[in-house]
Every structure is written in C-alpha cells, then in structure tokens.
Image (cartoon, rainbow over all chains, first blue to last red; front, top):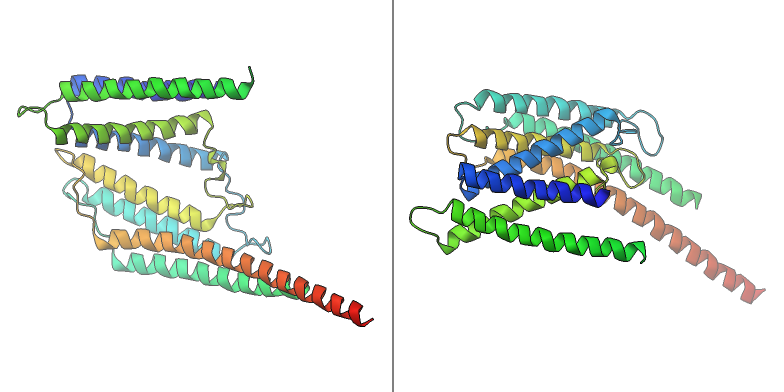
Length: 139
Length: 167
C-alpha cells in the first residue's frame, strides 16, 4: 500500500513532466523553477496543515525542558520569529511586482532576530550549566 | 517467501522502472525542446540535472505521502518535545525560500540566476546559528555530565579498591 502510493506519485511526476515538455517546451531552468516551486508549496502546505492539525508535534514548544514550566525566553523567540517573518514576507510581497531580486531585510530585523536568538541561547546555556552542575552534585 | 525479500524485490523493480522512465523523460526533453542551434552536450547535461532534481523532489513528496518520512517529529528534539530553535529555522527557511520562488516566478522569463543580498544570507545564518548553538550546548552539557559521572564512578571504585586492600 505504502509502496504503491510512492510509485503513483513518482510516475505521476514523470507523466506530468513529459506532458509539460511536449506541450509547453520549457527550458531546463524554467522546468527546474516550476518543479522546485511545486515541491516547496507542497512541503509548506504539509508542514502548516500538520502543525495546525496536530500531526506534527508542537507540544512543549513554550515549556522549559528541565522544569516543564512556561519559558519566557522561548516565548520571546516565538514572538520575534513570527513578527519578523510576517514583516519580511510583507516586504517581499510589496516589492514583488517591480523587484527583480529578493528585498534585503532591514538591519534592525537582523539585530532583533540575532538578539532574540542570543537571549534564547544564553538562557539555555545558563539553564544547562546549572542543571548539569546539579546532576553532577547529585551523583 | 519472507516479506523482507518481497519488499526488496518490489523496491528493485520500482527503481529499475523509475530509472527507465527517467531515461525516456530525458530523451523526450532533449528531442521536444531542443534549441534551434541544435542539441549540444551542455543542453543535455542541463536537462539531466533539471530532471534529476525534479525526480528527487517527487521522490521526497512520495515518501512523505506514503509515510516513509514521518513528519511528526519535524520540529521535535530526540525526547519528543517541540524545539523552538527548529521551529524558527523552519519558519525563516520557508519565508526566504518562498519569497525567492515568488520573485523568480514574477519575472517575465523565470531564471535561477538572481543576486541574493548579504542581509538575506545573514538572516538565514542567524536562524541556523541559533539552532546550531542550542544543539552544541545540549550535546556538550550532556557529554560533560556523562564524563563527570564516569570520572566520579571511577574514583569511587578506585577508593573502594584502596579501602579493601587496606582493610
């Protein structure tokens, strides 16, 4: 059953590619762009639907692993990530019709994401070092 | 016949058929879309690379759809809990890859030859660096704890031997 589904998708790709080549006469570069584009869209849909539907595990995303309690450093990283990604996606969509390149994210966005990651990492290092010392002391 | 051998036979036959289909597809590509100047070796190589990458993408999608790749732990650590570092890396990868795709497709003639600014690479680097730093911290601390416990156990054992020999 599993193998049959894999075969179907693989040979579906071969058939779709052959039809595209014969009827649309695309160049190798164009074919590659469309193939990667379709692949990316499918992976994004599967990931987003999986996370929203619960198939991809998101439990414990905002909890500290050692204590099991709510983690402020994880929360701030989540907020900065979501807001930063949303802002940059908006920038891309705004510049898309005229822009021939991916717009450069502003320096402050890099600084915010860097500081947020640094804060998360610093908290993690602090927690791990003290938990490690505690475990060593406990034997 | 054991199930393992049957599965192996199925895999081999599927791989052989897929390889033949790939060769046929390359031939179709070369003869259906050949440039006016004629077929050149570089044109053939371009098509083989493009179709191979497309086949890999289809294979990955097929493996995800059929359950060979289990995405349940896509953003999880080894202990099963979700990882914030993995999540943010996934989000930024999707945004940048999706943005690049949108910009490429918005052009009159889509090409892969686009300049990418340093800040875009910097954003990806920071995101991946955060993930890598978290991983190193976790592994180093766990290894340190194991090493310290081993050292303590060796010392305790040595002390026990010394006590026994004295007693």
